[in-house]
Image 1: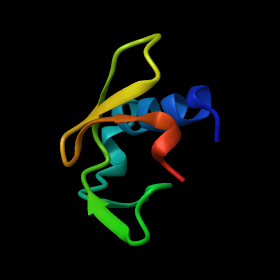
Image 2: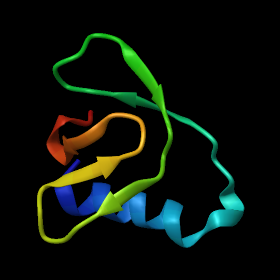
Image 3: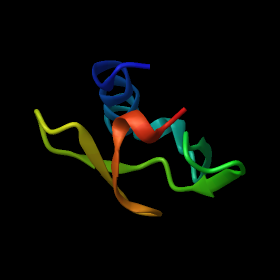
Image 4: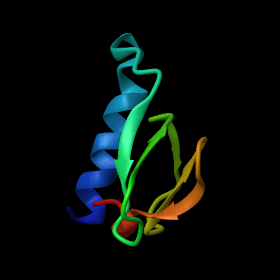
Length: 64
């Protein structure tokens, strides 16, 4: 997905706390296994990365 679409996904998690997702599964391009982490993230536009609680800052394009 494009950076913009990933930003919209993370923004939707923040905008709707009633979703109450304690964790989600991430699949990274350079990692063969899926990783469980927290879906909340810090979005700092217009940078092409996101600051996650579980993995630290990651490039949006590294998410599969």
